Image 1 (cartoon, rainbow, N blue to C red):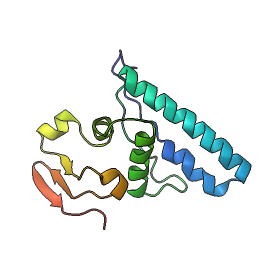
Image 2 (tube, rainbow, N blue to C red; image 1 turned 120 degrees about the vertical axis):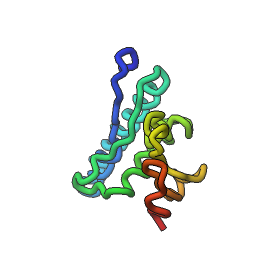
Image 3 (cartoon, rainbow, N blue to C red; image 1 turned 135 degrees about the horizontal axis):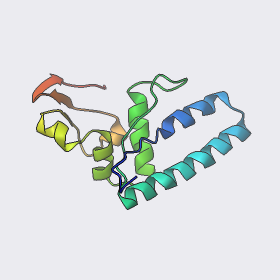
Length: 130
């Protein structure tokens, strides 16, 4: 994937969202699967695979917005740096050149707060989350 420039969008939050509908034994199994998945995310980042944040938003139990931040938190749990997470979530150089970017504080993954959204260099929304 790294050699060919193929991006990977892991969407671990979609699997975790199913836990609410499972027995305790099944929930434990999902946790193990997700942990293994996050090890693979870490390895992919290490070897240079382009990662993208995705959530499968709209799937059963996956709430738009909230799931994005939860997926970022999972990337952090996988051991990715803030720079890697930002690159996967919202920091594509071509988008930035076009004036499309988010304004966030360093702890935005934890606070789940985006300060501002810019599109074509113009601020389109001041705060997304209260």
